[in-house]
Image 1: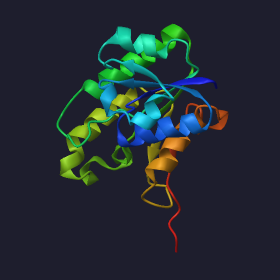
Image 2 (image 1 turned 180 degrees about the horizontal axis):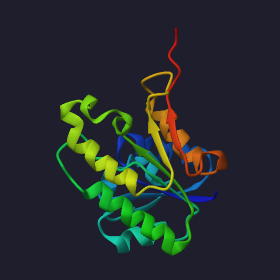
Image 3 (image 1 turned 90 degrees about the vertical axis):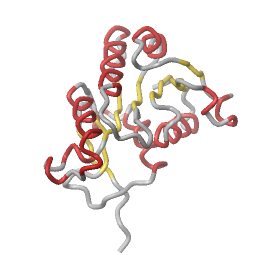
Image 4 (image 1 turned 135 degrees about the vertical axis):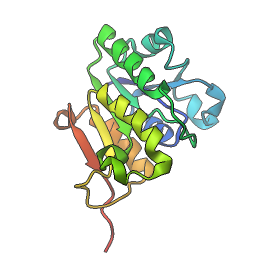
Length: 184
């Protein structure tokens, strides 16, 4: 693994994935709608690709020539109904297929693994969108499935795991639940 692209680069987990990949010595592409949202100290260490995941040509350009993809698409604090994330992941996967990029790590909501009636009402619509993303996925990394020993993971640990999972065959084509083990 030499070159990766991170989609959702300016979000909480995306920024952590960028930093983890840079620290690992990878060539890192940050796919962003707005480059000004990237921290100045990080910009010089990245290849910045400005685009929109809903525009297949810009996605294809960012994926071409990479060895792996990290997807941390989100809606920020907006929890309204949308199809932007699932359409975006479809464009990313199509670009990966077209350019023969095989490795992807995707971060999705743990609520996908809850019984639907147990999802808090405020998260129902965004969970439906994450389910559409899940249906389009290859390899999924997610937090807090029913079997996790805890309920949380630090954003830094999650960002690092998403990058590391790209070069770990034991995680390929898997649904992974991760958390920091609670201190007793």
